[in-house]
Length: 321
Image (cartoon, helix red, strand yellow):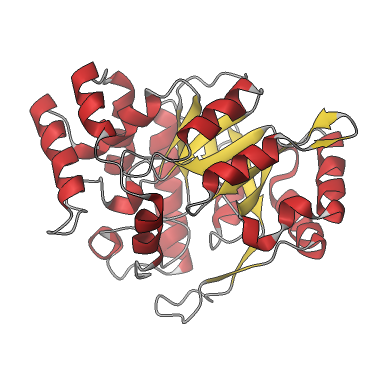
């Protein structure tokens, strides 16, 4: 595997568009959500992450203007030559910068969508684009069974871009296992996997371990469960998240640090993404690298995982705000 200076990465899903499902965005962002406002906020987040040693940045075509904001930041920071970038194709942002849009993004896993979106990503990020993921591959879309898509992705691989996929939903494990078994021209196609894993949703863990054993680099997304495991982010009746917070308090750290440290403790995790939307959140997330979670606490955390269908049903019901 290609090591990073710190195993924390920064994802721009929550900061580069006006609406998202993360808890607490109303307090974090307020009404300052114009394109210029979020460009400035994104740059401050990237500055804080870089200062904390973070060198991996995760974006996507559907994250509002994330690729554009990142490209502008890189242009303004010519010394940041060691930043590594992963992006994703397969969703289009259609929210038109409205917080109250009826639909914020639409999925399209066709080869035509790939051809259009990879050109857009490369136009903004050029040779800085290290890896490109199918965005939220699921069994329902059939993207992993589409010969045209697989051939197109192999063509990108031949250009030196690492090909991967991100996963969501209760079938993450099956999707990961299917992907790591796909060869094109005698070589594994998918060598980067980005999946949701946190102490409330651990079901993909064994499949991610298998992916890492097969040579893929595994990126953990949503380690704080879209804010449920961030300070003040849990609902009053979220007893599992409250227990994680209590365990963190017993260790003298914020709950986000315990949640991220638990993800870092997984030996198959190459990188764990922070989704911080301000420098203080990024710094707190990055500080998780210093926390060695006691074995007994890890054992208690293992008992807090929800049934995958319950977890994902609740996540799907979260409002964009």
